[in-house]
Length: 343
Ligand SMILES: [Zn+2]
Ligand SMILES: [Zn+2]
Image 1 (cartoon, protein in one colour):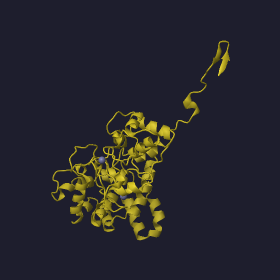
Image 2 (cartoon, helix red, strand yellow):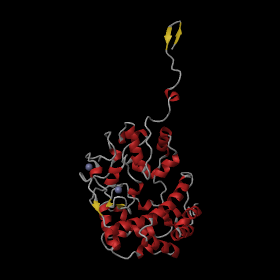
Image 3 (tube, helix red, strand yellow):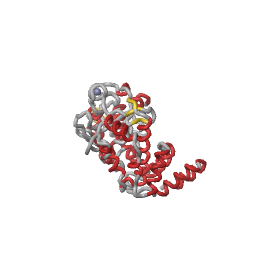
Image 4 (cartoon, helix red, strand yellow):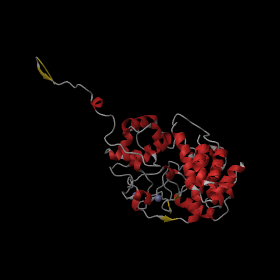
């Protein structure tokens, strides 16, 4: 405040944004494996903004804004998020599905309301119930993922109370994202569905094979995705229907039938080395922990360069599988061999 001949005058010396941090009051840390939209919903909630309003803060109008953010990583919205949270753009990119080699296996962003049709996102009630901060996982967007390996149950894709899909993006109320946007049901209380060990094993093996081949880039050129999409037609259960268009329950039925038959449809490949290792992964019931280590190391190196880098082929599959074979034969050499396949 200054004083002049005409009396006291008030002068604003600094603009508000110059004296306070640009960060929003509450910054929510991403959880391991979390989907970008899930984190965005939690961020909005923590700062007192309901999802639909938070979409407007990020420059979206209405609709499936957060699901679209996962897929398209819209620059303006991402700049707002990274500026106001301090979380690096590369970290946000890693949570998105932009440029995913598994894109063709993602559940589509549509809902025709039919009982046997897919919805865009699945969930495991027990995972949500055990989460300190309930969140949705990136892998729950995949049509090939039908069960939870941790809780040994089937995933769900609808609210058990009102049968609506997950629609947090349209939520008008300030409630956590694990409450159904249509009826308010707490999704953590949803019952779990039984899936047999054979179905879970097939699910895990397909996931491991896809993840490995996605990282090496071979998934973009071989016929595996096409075969996976045709699963509903294998035994005439849902002729001419793509796997991504079916509900979780219908896909579990397909896997049930598949699990009872030989897996040559999954193993065969023009490259004999690829076929050999697919067989190895199947016979070992997934080898998830080892592939997890290999894949995580490779993904980390890829993500460090995202989003600028766009790589169609990120590692040599033969080299990767050779290291995998050596680690299997002699686990004590694991550290050196894993390092050898880094790209
Ligand atoms: Zn679970
Ligand atoms: Zn509901």
